[in-house]
Image 1: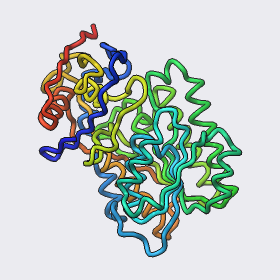
Image 2: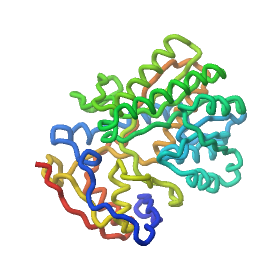
Image 3: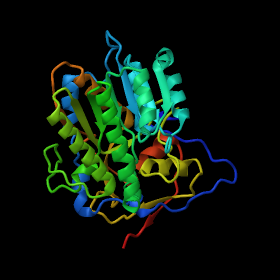
Image 4: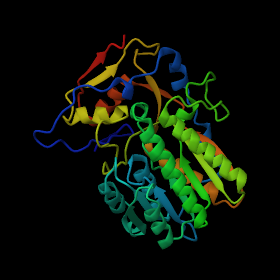
Length: 362
């Protein structure tokens, strides 16, 4: 773990001798946007996080009365960082996760990082589609709110396996909502995505831009948002905040938790990290002739801890006391960063020199 120039870098452990390396990255997983989309990706606004922070401190002092929060998918990348921030904020936290693309090791590391607050963390290996197992969790603990991360999230995979995504993301979510109703828990922060916008004609992209998801993953997020809006319309006891965020990166300063997915990564930085430790021989950069300052794709990246703080801010807003119904917020840095800029920043922070080559998309 190296912290330099305020850039946190997570470097996963080196592979075991003889482990398999993959030399190429599938283009549908990390190809940069087309030139016409660069303006959109480089201008994601941060106004929503500012709006949240105006109404709630994203890193609150421990509440006078400790609240208990259920975090689905809390062993994952964003979930684990959010759980740590919850514990530091004085919340009792229960994680449910099926560990399909995560590890219980992350939960134990969060417990260690939380120090004296680690005793307030519980973990259950549960798939949200298992209604009985989920009900057992709710019957044993009274929850004040739920933060819902759990779900499959690879855009490319969702195109190839749409039924898997609809089954996992929607059935699991409906089970969760029905069990929440049964046990009287009606406060929710939902981990949505900027994919619900598709490729909007208007930039910058505000929360008022028409929604138009363009792949099965994005549609599961949009459908879940629709369900949330319908729930709030039908029952005024519900309060829900939808957080639409863009490209999470980075790691906790300790380096103990970060993005180290099982299987082929979905995002740029895990590929970069794996090249740095020798798990991949080189990084494939898809395209270098885009209408950007260095010809590579530009995206809006938000640090995972800032993103976690955004979830805490949303949670605090739910506990303010006033009825809000269903509200949506974008979370982004407001600054576009290219693939090569990310690679250069990683090299500077880690001291590693990365081998990469360009792949012509034409």
